[in-house]
Length: 248
Image (cartoon, rainbow, N blue to C red; front, side, top):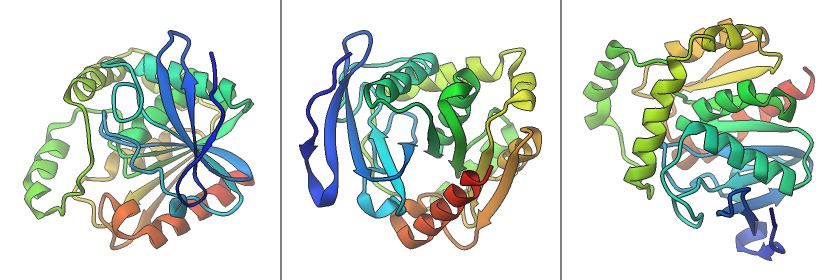
C-alpha cells in the first residue's frame, strides 16, 4: 500500500492517493489539524461531495476518501466489506490509530457497518440523515411521496457502484447477528436527523436507543442535504457532536 506525496489543492485542502491492498488507487482529501475524522459521503456510489474545508470544525483533521469506482478513485462496483477494507487501507496509510467516523445519508449506514466490523479503529460515529438498517415499505412510500417536494442537489454518481452497494446493504441487514452486534457495540454513536428531511427519522431514533452509548438529535428546519444548503448549521451540528464524543 502506497501513499503519494500530498498535493496542495483548493483553500487549504490537500489531496493524496492511497493504493488499496488490491492495487486500486483511491483519492483522499485532507484538511485541518486535530482529532482525526473520516467523512463518508452518501449515495451509495456518489462522489466525495463533503470534501469542502468549510464543513470541517476547528480542532479536527478531516479525511475525505472518495469511494472506489467513482470520481477520482479507480476501481468499480464493490460490496460493503470492500468499502470497509478501503477505509482501513486509508487509515493505515495515514498512520491513524483510531478516528471518528462521520457519515451522511448512505455514509451513515457505512459508518455503522465500519464500527461493527472494526471497533478498535473507530472512536465514535456521527451519523447524519441516515437511512438505517431496514427495508421498510412505509418508510419508502413516505420517501417516494415526498421526492417531488425536495430540492435536488446535483451530485455525480455511478449506477454500477450504487447497485452493488445497495445489494450488499440488503445482504448486511439480513445477517442473523446484526441486531446482537448493534446491542453489544462499545462504539459511542450520535445520530442527527435533518428536521425538514422527507426521509422518516425513526430508524435513527431506534439505533440511538439500541446501541449502548447512543444519542439522537434533530437539526430543525434543514433538508437532507443541509451540508450544501445550510453549511453553518452543518458545522454547528458536527462541532457539537465532536465535542460530545470527546467526553465519552
